[in-house]
Picture 1 (cartoon, rainbow, N blue to C red):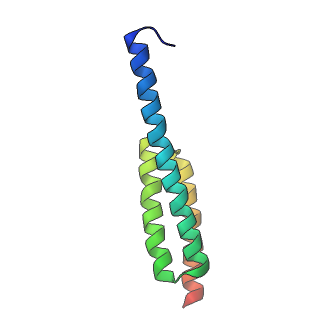
Picture 2: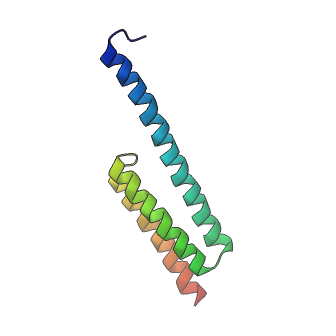
Picture 3: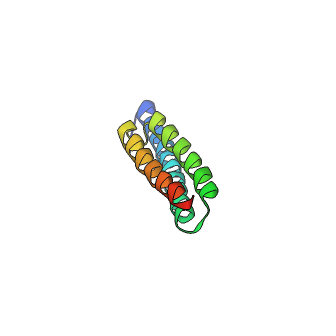
Length: 91
């Protein structure tokens, strides 16, 4: 256990930040699952709305440092390509 006040504070801060980061990652994974579900069983418009939400979450997590910016960009690009293929096939 930490003895100094600053070390005790760092422990509290680390626990709070870890909980916040876990929540953000969980939200990101849930949005990705929702997008995949819309891609498989939903309409193109539903998939576009889900992609927009997921893209915003990826950008926010990359800004906060939860995921690397290149990771977010790569995933957004792949999701966008899948959405584009579905919308071309749907027309």
